[in-house]
Image (cartoon, rainbow, N blue to C red; front, top):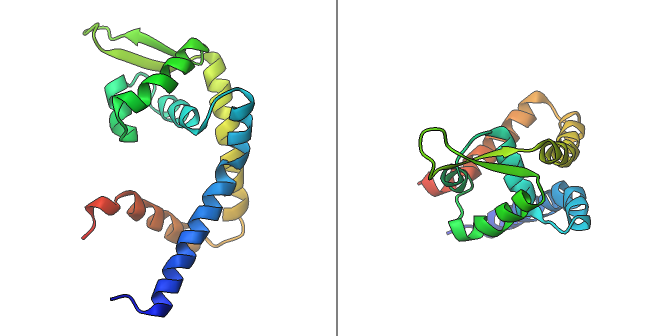
Amino acid sequence: MVDLKRRQQLNEALELMHFGFRKMIEKPDQLLAKRGMGRMHHRLLYFIGRNEGLSVSELNEVLQISKQALHRPLQQLIARELVSSTADETDGRIRRLHLTRKGRALETRLSRMQRNQFRRVFAQVSKREERAWREVMRLLGQSDRLP
């Protein structure tokens, strides 16, 4: 059983995560909203940009979302000519995803906002503290595999 002090510390961690995440996505979300898009569009642009040529199935795997959840925003990005979808050279049933020039420019602008936030915040803490934060985030990302 978690004692009351520890419970309060864990609640504080939840709140910090909530407010930190909200600030991290605030400006990119505003820019996307002006274009009739949302956070999922940014996630797709980001991961396609970091994994040029990945297949739709591979993108599903990276994001751990269903094909249904991926379909609509991906089709919107393709229709807006931000992402291109081409047949695989050896298996035409597989679609390979790439950012277009416009897509790369938008992804760079969105992610630059967030990288700059990290740069400013990390400049205020020690390298050891930054490494500790990264380790916490890494472990949270793998929390379904933890005991």
